[in-house]
Image 1 (cartoon, rainbow, N blue to C red):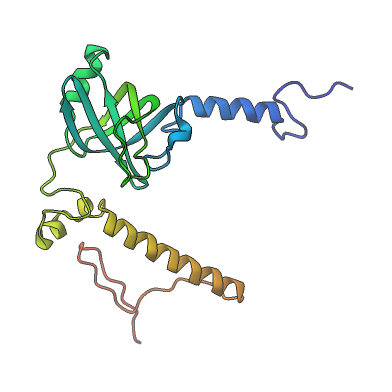
Image 2 (tube, rainbow, N blue to C red; image 1 turned 30 degrees about the vertical axis):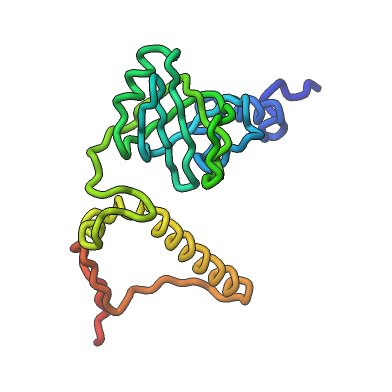
Length: 212
């Protein structure tokens, strides 16, 4: 009898060629190809797409430099003086904490930064897509912030973008993950039951278990 045609697979299971086509289509519309802490000098010459927050932006001569940040690190972007005027205008308008998706070529930096894992490269941009604009934050989103504790507590969602808190969240996740893995390996079951009482400052109702 006739075998499956391209993409049909066997017994409803997609063929290898079908899966490859789907993967290629997905990568064509991918939100990003790499994280902001991933690229190295070995990636020079590659065309990449990154996404993240604007850490800072600065002009030097006719060039615009932008530090793009996600939770994995920071990568420097550059728009040179010979780029299209629309691209230069967009780069000049960027503000702190704006959310971008950018595409460009990985090139070797002339002045390397040994303090950054990505300090040997930068991205020469060919496209900037502004995903979301933002008001100037009330304090700097850096390891050593200029915001006091009360101000950072008020804008907790911004404070959580800083590396010290990111590391604390990651450590908490890792500890909980290891504990759950160990208990699971010992045959324990994790069953959620209501708390006797737990106050929530956000205003949600408390769980209360009747005593009789």
